[in-house]
Length: 64
Length: 196
View (cartoon, one colour):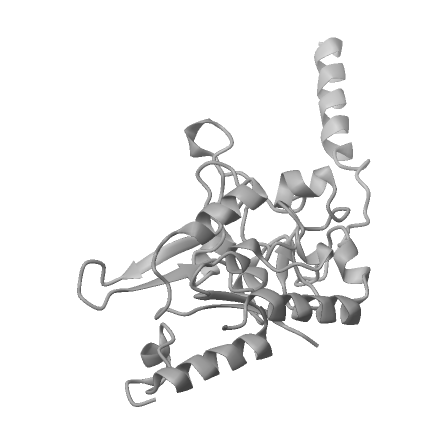
């Protein structure tokens, strides 16, 4: 009988303390904001690349 | 600031599918995925039109708006790219995209969807430019090399044009003026009506 009480008390203790070890802080993400790795293309010189791409466009894609 | 755009001239496209082949070859696109497709309107009917369709790199991209993990970002040139490390392959972007651009490779049994794959405007993704890791995930990064997408650069009839939106618009305007009449852009009448 004492063994049964012991098991019962143990179960009640486990049920009462379940989740107590979980951290209370949560990570809140702002929706709509990209959270991945930064593309190196974004940090390159945009002006220089734009003129480079425009020159390339004029070289091959304009009508003859 | 330049905004990169594609334009397919339906009057010039001859449905050769070279853009599709070039894209697959340049980016080593997996089997079952087509980043670019040629769509034929009124196939077999006199006056049929063909257009080459891929991601249009929308200014207000619906794929980015619906993505639950926010894996999309836009470069300074207006190129819409995504991070495959964040993508969960949910398929929302596919439902949102009016062009059917997002594709999903079958990576496991029972047709389980892999990470989303789409046209990158040959600008790779968020990995070191022109690295093996970037090539394996996103394909080649021609923009970082000062080049434009291969599909447009090799188009034999110059139907598919890719570059700064203003320059693309100038070319198309000149063509329309030369041909006479109204713009024949696909979807024009749907958007603006027959008299538009």
